[in-house]
Image 1 (cartoon, rainbow, N blue to C red):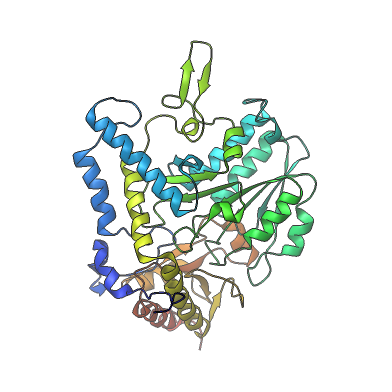
Image 2 (image 1 turned 180 degrees about the vertical axis):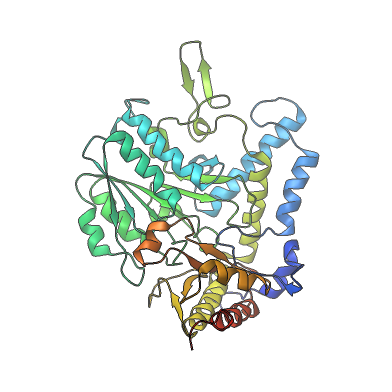
Length: 428
């Protein structure tokens, strides 16, 4: 085998690693195409969490007994594993309860800087009336509403970069929207509706040119692409465990060292302090200063196991496999009469995700029709209402792949969607 050849994933064999897939839904084989909402977990991830809870369960960074020391070691080893997965050092990775919590942490921390907390190191992050925060039209609500709230609290202006009709970002508009008053540029790496990989390097360059902070939502890229966040040049990035074969209740915030040091604290309490008096407190350095209270210890350990599972497969192999699935899915949906693909752009990088509208049939009805055939998809606005409004619809159907998605799964989806309009008596 040449050094450039990428191994192929045997997705059909990988299904055996995921216990939940070994069942029938309404008498039909389960075709799970909702990994964009939450991924299924391989047995090794489930076992890793159970093993911790049954053999090493204890609070971390608190006790001096054997279990506490072992739990702390496992917890910090998990941090190193997950940080390495995205190209970062352990001290640049903050544990959170998920990406939503990570993005809110950043927005509220900047708000604290604006209120004068953490000065003088935090002063450069402070916002002032007339300053601008820039997002894109394709953001998940978790990377939109925190910035709306921050703008409302600080008197800043929230602006957005529009998308073209094919779903790609309008970079010409971005160059005019990002300007001298821009202080924050927050954007998704991969749209959870369109599946399109956004041009991170170009957006970072525009932000850097005006001294703006960049915040990346990497929820839909971390499970599917080989990530090197420092190489991308972003200041901060958030991702969640449950979308990348890991458990619920855990996610991470990546940050460049100087940015994490400058951000004021958000949540305060135990485990993130050095000195406390009745009148004042001093905080630990990052990442611990952002990790107040009891942490999701078993979840971090299970997430590290999910990372090891993906690393054993090879992220190049994962990306290649999902590219094959994406092309088959997009081409098939494109050929079904009455189906409109959202973000049907040519020549762009994508992950294995497609959202579509079936003419004359509500997305929820399409989802129920497919579910009766054992096919699990997401229906609704996918926490991206403004983007759906941009395309003139209130809801869509989304099919999203993972490492265990097979071509047979895609064919089952296509066969199901092909029968939707006839079943509901729509069209010729």
